[in-house]
Length: 483
Image 1: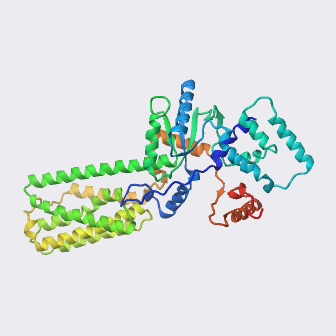
Image 2 (image 1 turned 90 degrees about the horizontal axis):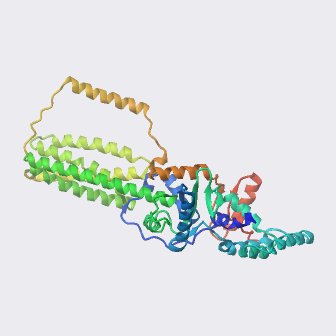
């Protein structure tokens, strides 16, 4: 009986999937996602994984410190999740068998298609045992209804499949998943929208903070999973972009003040061509990639800003006939470096380098035309600085070169993709506990589409059984089409 009472949550977590939500509107020209960090092969895997609603599970984890109070908080939170959130497909806490009656009905109806009819003696014994349980004088009404409708107790097989697929080996206590070692309550939540819809995730968290059950918001809960981490990463990108933008604006302001106080205000005319070059670079990047990432605009703008060096060189050395030859060599060496980085498999680097190359070339061309045609607008007096050679300067440069060569030979970059995980320390610790120490290893999993999907699934099931491979597909739950 106890096993039967836990069946509903097992089934819901292992085989339930929410209905597909309407497609999101087309993306804008500006991108602030984190998937651009990943090489194409890894990005494809992430996209495929996130495109199936079966994987849209997140987890609310509460650290139990006050036994009575925290269980009350969990109960109130569970109730609010079930009644006050329209975009949730499933909430797995304090479940009843009534919620999976339809699924169990389909399962027992297909029993005769999965197995040959047992002989009369076995059939009679199964009926007698099942009806004896269903005739107990006291018990849960839904439980009794299930036993009477399924006297062969075919739900045992479905429970075995569900337990094998349930990647959450936690015990049940008071209608919740609970870990006795760490004293943590876990509420699995299946979202009704994809992880990429971060605005919907943010709204969910805001609503949750208002209905968290203890009057103190959700500060004591940890929200982890694909939706939670995607939102955290996007928020970190936006924060980084804001910091870079503020620093860039501050430097530009300081640069402007320096020009004014030095009596070289004409050099302000060098700024508009650079801004125009950034616009051209952004337009070309959008045309090639379909959008431009926030970090490309933030960090790429600093690279395009290097073009100011060419304008400053020409403005301070307007009488030199060879200044543009020097500028050209400087541009070419920079472009070569950017093209090398453009060969990276990381989309963000390729996009940033394209933006930078187009911006630098455009700014260089504009400066060349403007300073050749209208040098009087930019002409300013030369700087009085005279380079000098000192022994300590030479030693410092040589030391830097030695450190660079040593570092290139010994240092290795950290390529761990977890470097792109910007969750707070508490959420990261809970995620590690749940996904690395609690989650079981998933079986081989494939999804087929089209009219022949079920037949292909049964062919793969036959192969998996002959090869002793743990396999998961529709054939584990549905009879073959011929049957």
